[in-house]
Image (tube, rainbow, N blue to C red; front, side, top):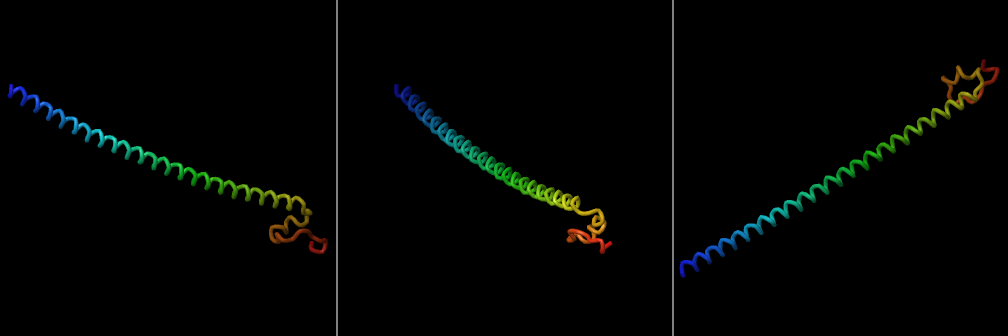
Length: 104
């Protein structure tokens, strides 16, 4: 009887140790999962930040390209409005808006 009771107690102790080990394992796994989730969240934020920066650069480039197009269009309109006698001189004197017959 005493032997059976000792075996029972040993089994209860081993079971308690096993439960405690499983608890530590579960806490470790939970901590690992939490750290993994935090890492993924940081990576996602970094990707979002990089995407925003890339989009802002693209918007800046587009704005610059549109400004260049507008400048070219304005130059072409001014060139189209110039009399033919001034077109050859326009490259040398871009500030000239008109030409007179005396300048020929």
